[in-house]
Length: 130
Image (cartoon, rainbow, N blue to C red; front, side):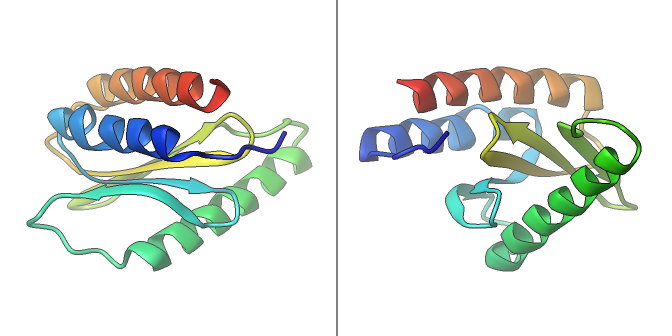
């Protein structure tokens, strides 16, 4: 399915990224398509990531992991999580065309984070389908 995003869609998605996800300690969040194009983003003032590179590499990483999933008989993997020494990254598929990429530090509860991300994805999906 192909989506045409209008300004009200983009505004709604940006509000979710800026208002709901930072509450749990996410300091950078990207909403991208599977080609790595940035649709919406939020980054806390005290962090500076190379957003275009993050988007491109996130899409490529997700594509590679999904190819691995198919090799072992899975349709795909809808969630990926990478833990680092200081920062972590969580990838979630939104519908079939988009990714939500969240960067957070080790002080964030993974359970709470996953709950908030699931709620955000539900709201984003509603926006995309409207």
